[in-house]
Image (cartoon, rainbow, N blue to C red; front, side, top):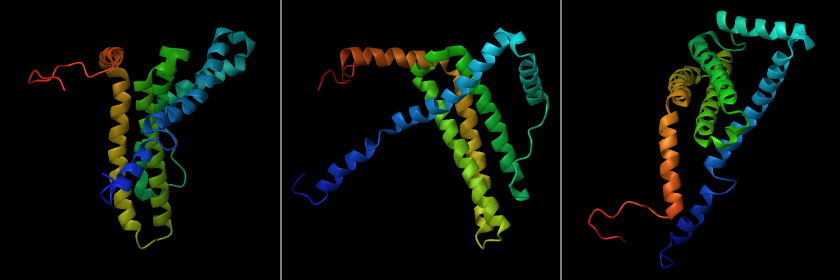
Length: 209
């Protein structure tokens, strides 16, 4: 390889996958950072309901908030251009579903959530898509409000991206509930490979390299 001019490019490019941490580690950081805040709030609510007479007003407020959330339509996002209402509605719907999914995971796993890396990846992927949806809707709304010459194009991009991102978020959140068995199977296979420190199946020709 050293005889060819692209040798250095190929060698140096390897650092891109580990510089500042791998994508997988960054996903865990994103998920755990967000879940930490949600976990602290859920813990506080749990303590409150264990001893409701310690603060009856707070208990009543929490119950009212949860009931209102279930029966009421979400408030309209501020600052969104009317042409992007459908995209904003998708963002709101997925955000609510995302919050419910995070709370469900915390109730199920508690502190051991840190070991559920496959579930954390789904949470991270969903949160990344939510952030990207928010950013694109915000940018396109500004372009439309300012009558930018590229506003129509940005509107089309945002509407399409919102639908694509919404589908990805919905799929990730659905997998949190439906892929429990598959996750267990995947972990079992990974444990077997790790224990033997090699690719286990034999070569199809009968010759192991």
